[in-house]
Every structure is written in structure tokens, then in C-alpha cells.
Amino acid sequence: MALALVDCESFYASCERIFRPDLKNTPIVVLSNNDGCVIARSTEAKKMGIGMGVPWFKVKKSFLLQGGQVFSSNFTFYGDMSARVMNILEGFVPEIEIYSIDEAFLGMDSLEEHYNLYEFGCYVRSLIKQWTGVPVRIGIAPTKTLTKIALNEAKRINVPTKVHQISTTKEIREALRNTPIRDVWGVGRRLSEHLNQAKISNALQLADIDPNYIKRKFSLVLERTVRELRGQRCLDIENNVSAKKQIVVSRSFGNRVADLKTLRSIVSNFAVRASEKLRNEKQKCSQVSVFVRTSPFSNHKPQHTGHKTMELLNPTNDTRDILIAAKKALLPIFKPGYDYAKAGILLSRFTNETTKQYSLFKDPNEPKDNSKFMKYIDQLNNYETQIYFASQNTKRWSPMKQNMTSPKYTTSWYELPIVK
Image (cartoon, one colour):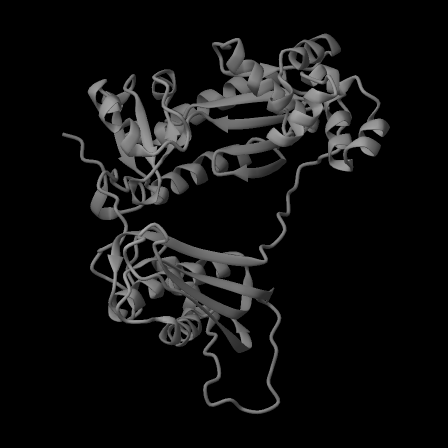
């Protein structure tokens, strides 16, 4: 019985190095939208003491003086590289659960009798590095929670191969003994404080407690964690991820927006992106909401927050219908004379795209809902946007501050790397 957890090392920073081999040993940080905070750090940057989430302006001078390299977030590039890694993994195992953009659980039960799992992990890691340039770590263990422990052990003892397996009782108990309670998957800061008060400071002490007592004293979730630490699998590979209940696309602006025309084009961009996500989820929506707000930190300027929800007569995932609803929602909440700092769109009340609800009476503004047309547009825009809707901003202008974005090496014909 075995599972594996594949974790891309310092993923965003590693992506930036793929087409920049000159940055191999250079400290790298990646910033959030509007270049506000540090959201990713290379190993070198971590050793310099750069904290996760720290405001960039606080560490900028020191970091750059020490030879560090900074990038604005390039989520299009990161998402494409993640998809390439996950596609490779899907070719190796019968079961995979993509847990996040840089993590995936692998079901390896059927491979145990045919392969040495440690050697198999080393082979998978080397192939991912060769084919994508992304370095990964792999933890192998009987349960999901223990794969996290195995990964932490690989970091702690600095395993040269970056692949670590714990399978025997001795290996598991040793790894648990070296894992602080706060580092156990599913144990947050507040819960770890309560456990510390109960004289439970590491994962081994938690594993040795009666699960039924934990269930009575704390929760069913923590009881499952205890059983997982003991090697009892309570969390299986989730092949079918549950459908989302809502989709939100929003951004804070680096440059304030005061006119309706500009704000409308920004909201239209958000609506187009949200519609693409909705179709990708194979869902339709019956509610479209738009919100705008000024910056709460601009004390010397007037404040305004607006929110409006439009009900759709029939569920739809056609971008044109969602754009119409977004435009209607924006008009009453926009107030002239304000400098808007953030806007967003929210789609909700989902139904499966195969379900169609008809109205008793013919509506002159009946949704277009042309799924084939939308499918063709999505295919054309898969890598680089080629078809825009009239209300969108097509000038590649962005209200966000992203002055240090790397090229979209793998998703834009205009930004392909040039080899001289």
C-alpha cells in the first residue's frame, strides 16, 4: 500500500529559471499582483531571510544589493508549466489527484509488486526535470498525511535524490518523532497551540494517542489525521474533483481608475476570463455579480463600494450573455468622482452544462447560449488570445503594476525564446 506526493520545488522561482540558466544560483523572488508582496522564493532567497508574504518595499533595497533577481507574477506561464508536469505524471500512474498548481498525489498501490518504488520515484523525477526543467521532490508513504511527512524529512535531512520513502514502522516512527506538531498536514497554528498545551509537541506523540479520545476531545478530522499517521488510509485519491460553487475573477489596481469606459473594459476582461473558467468546469450560471471599490487606505479621498447581482432567466456559459449582464450590473454601482482601486466579477448558481431549462414564454432577450461557437473561440484562444469581444480592453494595457514580468515563453507566439 503506497501513495506518493510530488511537490515542485520553489515552483514559481523554478519556472523563471527554465529559460534563464544564468540565474541557476541567483536568489529569486516572485511578487504578487501589483508587485506588492513576496509570494515565492528560491532556496537562496530563503537563506537570505526573505519571508513569505513580506511587503516588497521592505526588503527591496537589501535584496537587490545582494544580487537578487525579482519578477512580477506570470501566472499564464506558471499554469502552462504546471500542466506539462501534471501531464507527465498522468502517463505514469493509474490514479492522480492534482492537489494544487505545484502538488499532486499519486496512487501507487498497483505498482508495488512490479517496481521498486524508490527507484521509480527517482526515474519520474529525472524525467520531469529533463522534459520540463522543473525540479520536484517526491515523498512516498502508505497514506497522504505520511507522504507530507516524507517530504518534510527529505528537506530536513537534505536527501540528494530529492526522493524519500518511509514504509517500515521504524522509518515512520523516526520521521514522526522529527516532525513538530505544527508541521503535520491539517494541524494549523491554533490547533497546534491547543495540542502543545496537552503536552503533544510532535507527530509521534499525536500518533500514539487513542484516536477515539482525539475524536471526543477535538474533532473527527483530527481523529482521521491520527489514523493516517498510524498508517491507516482514511483519505483516498480523489479522481473526480467536486465542481466549484462559484467563480471569482478580481484584481486590485496599481493605477487608480476613475472613468466608466476604462472600468467597463476591465470588468469585461474579467467577465471573459470567468466565462472561460465556467466552460472549463462544464457548468452554466444563473447569477452574475459585479463589485467595485476604492482603496480603504486612501484616507484623504472619498470612499465608495458598490455591488450588484443580475439574475439570468436561463442558465448560460456563453460569454456574450455574461458580458451583457456584467454591463448592466456595473452601470448602477459606478459613481463618478471616485478613484477605484479594485473590481471583480462573480458567477454563481451553477447547473450542469448538459441541463437546459426552457421558459414558458418567448423572451426577446433570450440568451444566445451557443456552446459550439464558444468552444471554437476557446480553442483559438487556448495559448494566445486571438479573438476579443468588442467591450474588452485590447491594447494590452493593464491597471495592475507588473513591471518585471518575464516573457510568456510557452504560451505566446510573440514571446518565444530566441536562441542566438
